[in-house]
Length: 191
Image 1 (spheres, rainbow, N blue to C red):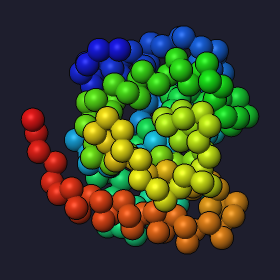
Image 2: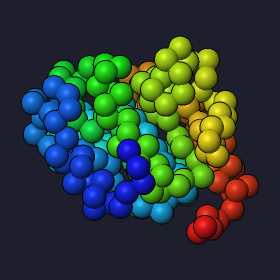
Image 3: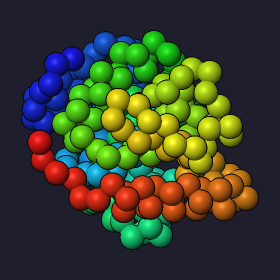
Image 4: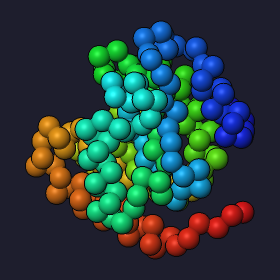
């Protein structure tokens, strides 16, 4: 997918019928936030609440994400939040490699338009599809990955924290590293 504009990209996402996921959804969830964000947050895919509202991370995990951002002095409006896939997989299952492969060009186009300084990958699925199919979240979280001019930080998904609050201390360390990296990189400059 070549570089495009936001209106064109959003039209392309809305019109997409490349995989079977679109048959079982209420709304596409392209993502939302600051189109000039310094931080791009990438999750797995929409859940029930996201499918109903057409917005990323609005359910219980999204509410926790909002609190996590506030802990490092960021608001949701400051960042851009998206997912690997734009349609809800049935039963909130993980997207298949085929589904992700068909949807990833949209995420890449969003990344090209935003040009974030840091990408925060939430959970194993985002890590697997953005970095490597063999990457494991428990081994990779909290370690910077530099790719194509982007600093990428994998951490646990907020839904995992809701299931296992013991992981919150690790995520807090990761978030502090994200905050510090953004401070180190300074303001984003247009090129």
